[in-house]
Amino acid sequence: MTTLDGWRASAPVGAAAGRLWSVDWLGVEPWGAALYGNPCRECGFDWSLTPAEAVRWVAGWGARLAAATAAADGTERRVDGGWSVSEYASHVGDNLRQWAERLQSARLAQQIQVAGYDPDALAVARGYATLPLAVAVWSSELAATTWVEVLTSALDEDVSLRHPTRGLQRAADVARNNCHDAFHHLWDVEQILVTSSSARVSAERPFYSRHADAYDLLITDPVEPWVDAVHDRLVLAGRPSASVLDAGCGTGRHAAALGAKGHRVDLADASPELLARASARCPASRALLVDLCTMRLPAEYDAVTCRGVLNDMITDAEREAAVAALAGCLRPGGLLFLDVREADASRSRADGGTRLVVAELTGTKQPTGNAELRFHTRTTWERGLLRVEERYELWRDGRVEQESSYDFTMRPWSRDELFELLRRHGLRHVDITAGVGRRTADRLLVVAR
Ligand SMILES: C[S@@+](CC[C@H](N)C(=O)[O-])C[C@H]1O[C@@H](n2cnc3c(N)ncnc32)[C@H](O)[C@@H]1O
Image 1 (tube, rainbow, N blue to C red):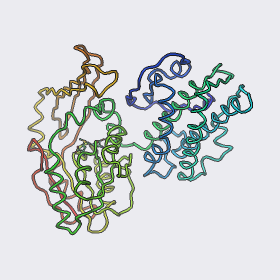
Image 2: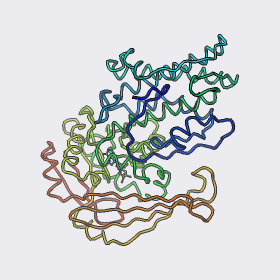
Image 3: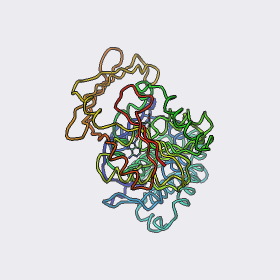
Image 4: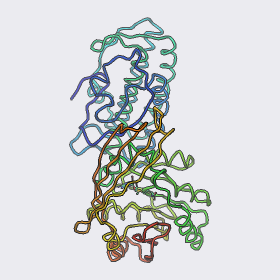
């Protein structure tokens, strides 16, 4: 247990999600960056954000927390223990509340000396563990709203506090430190709720996280064939304006096009970065940061679409869990639309050759300049699995600025496996035909009800 003020250590899991903010190092106290790394070794928080950016981020805290926990019940925690989702939500609220009170003490009563507190002891005293998630989220958002109001004034007045271990704390330092606390614990919540290995890949794979801005530049196959196929079937089924869950929505390209045809589409994905893009593209849609293998939603949707996703589930248990979850969201008679890789055709495409695609990023990354992402992939076949090796090179003004690599595995589907699994989960009518709108002939379109 750590007693660092307002901070609770978490188990280090996986790579940090890259986020970019503008650089302003003037007058920044080094405490947080020195302790957690810059960017933070776990959550990827960039300490060079400005106080105003920190305040803006915290202003969106309630919405972020609500989206991240929409499909949770609050009791989920890491397998090795630690705080639950609901306890993290309460902690962030109390930390923001506590610091807002400290700044108000300086502003309203000239009391600048603050005392440290033990967040674990506070959790017990306040009974975080018994607070329902909806109440923890409500209370946390309320605290964030007050904090934003207080910080805005304290920054204007350049209020300073004196902390027993950190020394002088200007309002600007409080803004960054508190923003990191919230940012990091949102990351904890996301990590807890994203548990299967496919969901872990979604959260870690650079193409879905640090380089998510390249996704729409590189995936440019037309959306219409898939969207038309789904729409036509829904019209035939008497649902011209259906409620649809796009499971594994990516950046929301297909969800937006289905929305434009009059359907009401909810978004679900395990990659926070891709989901944020989908949400920006479909602002009226509910966005669920979920692991499709553990998702539990009411059986209310007229249709569930799941395109290019189920290949990422490689164990039998994950495939079973994902299909059960998708089937479980459908109202009686609802339609499930899948696009998956077919095993034999995938095997012949996995020739071990390296492919290079390039995304022009100029204007999409900070600092700007002539930037491009060179994305090398090599795919091989091994006993029913596609092994994918990826290498990313971020070039700026003619030289490599960042290089990383990532390997993962996919498992294509046979028709027999699809028939069997779908039937086992109550989908009696299963149609399997050639994929639609794909540039290669290794995909299947599955429509089941
Ligand atoms: C190849 S992309 C396809 C995105 C989109 N459907 C499309 O066709 O453009 C696969 C998507 O599935 C998501 N995904 C994979 N496994 C997942 C899981 N277990 N839970 C939620 N999303 C998952 C990834 O994050 C990613 O957005």
